[in-house]
Length: 241
Image (cartoon, rainbow, N blue to C red; front, side, top):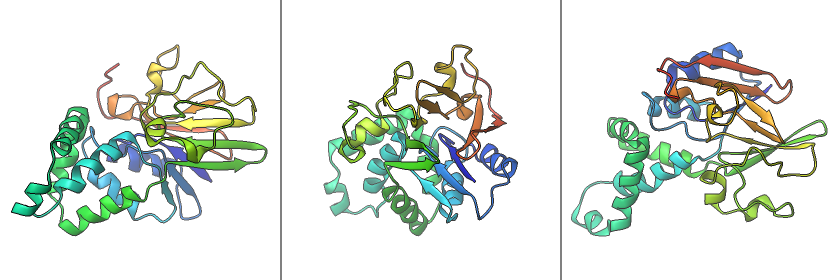
């Protein structure tokens, strides 16, 4: 089976429980729509588990991207030369990352070896921007945030990275006229999309939104491509909205 999850945000216990709940095995495939890092309690542990699994496909999220920008510059030996290479924009990236939940990742990153740090950065650097899955006549476009500056005729490779990992989807709008084509996203917690404000997967208007706000006290969710079924694990954190 193929499963899609997103925005684990360091919720390691919920992530492991979810894998157990779907009976995830070597014949299954897991597609993670980014943002396994930041905010939650164990982001590095989540990343290291994902990295060791050959049947995981990882797509970059905005938190991953911000982490890479900061850590590629800062996860180096401190010398006079490396200090001179630091620019004000590097420190600005680091500041914005800290403001958006990067502190826990940075602290845990410092606690692992240089080799382990480089492995994580390499893994994130090789992450996909999007993926397309086929199931019968249905096609699913997987991306972290959405398709900003959308045009029906626009090829996926022609979108800017900011369009794919930062720009929020308009879930009230159907993007592709072909109803067999669905956009699957994370990034936006479904409690802010669904009229009932429930932390459950949203599926309407040619969209499937799978970020059920685990780090905000909602659920960590997995959606099965073959069956269309959703599996949930309740967050161990207090509900924030």
